Length: 212
Image: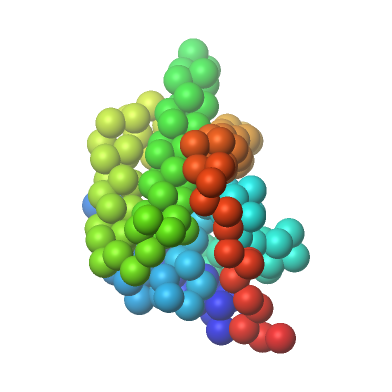
């Protein structure tokens, strides 16, 4: 249970940062929450990252589902706080033009791939085990992707963030499919490519369920 509480908390602060202060708020919140919870849950805070970790072999499907529940719950609570306490709400207009959907999908795939690929390499490999830079590297990746390709999609790179920002009306529900397809697709791509490149780095057993 402790694992999933940490995922809830980390995703909560990530989404709160995104909802109140955009890419910079999200990146800094993610960075500090990774340092706070990485040793307990692996600090995914992103359903697409959890999918990549599962493909990597460091989480079971049962664990992944529990991660997803905690992540989406944390995201929803955070955005409700942004809406009803801090009174920050979007316009409800779809930010991606009809002729920009292909660019948006590509941007979200690239951004999510980069994020998941960095996480797999700095936080799950034997060669980087015990490092102290992983939080900075991951937070920096989110900011870098937001500043480069985020202009084409809004820069979610995270299905939980996309759902939360749709609730906030920063994104629109008619385009939520773009983020779900592209973000999970980027996570799958990162997991598959990581496994191919690191075929000699066999995963340790999946993260244990602290509640069992």
